[in-house]
Length: 334
Image 1 (spheres, rainbow, N blue to C red):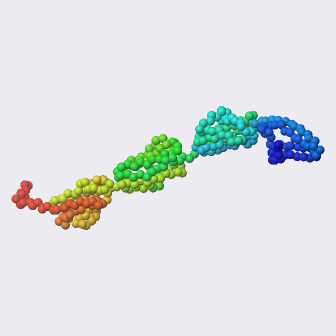
Image 2: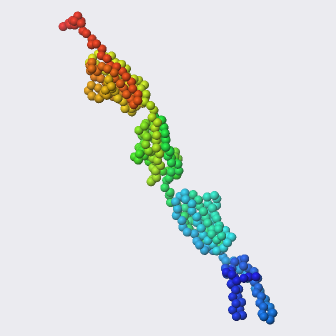
Image 3: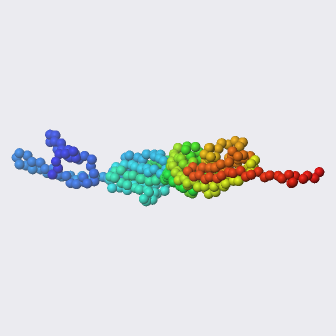
């Protein structure tokens, strides 16, 4: 039996009995009967067959154009008027082959074409065909900005070793700039730039403590930053100054050599700091340091100390007796 509902609407007016079937589908095809009886016990019955003609397949919600950035995923979708149908998808007139990147999904009346990890090769005109009906839309791909896939990492090196900062970009053809504390670095003997596919490297040669700071790689408006830490090698005096025994009026030089350059040193005489001037001249060339004492006199005698950070060495300056000239040796021939 059929009861009055949203699907079936029964109407009785005078001698007319009506059954209205809403939103008819193929599964509504059947023979429908109505049976009537009056108070005298008289019965009457009649039947009729409903035939539902299938509607032509058509698109009720068409595709829409899409503009997206490369590497993104997009979905073209449309809706049709019938269930359990398969649509045909083409790109620039050629049928699309579906795989793990390009998918076709159906959810009742909704049909979707999903394109993952879009590239410029995916640009074009997409068409979906439903029977004799078609819908067309265009996919436009814009270039994505270069980004960092792997960022710079902090580096710790021993003094005089090379430091290497590396990062990986999303694009191979990208122009990068390197910075030290925000100021651009130019390639040279100390700084070397390397490119290997989408990898970029900054090599800092023979690191010193003054190289400790923040380094960054810049591409477009993006930056990757990391810090360099340099473990300093302790200063060692590998050649200390030697005692000097020289005649008055002579110029003498104390030499000292360290295990590394760029070290601030001090010279002292009898625990008094020596100052650069006409009497004392101090020179440093790489690892070698010199103290020249000009025209030595008795007051210049004493202990000289060479200090480099927490290391020191000592040497003495003594005057030798001036040579005497005997009268017998002064015979002159004119």
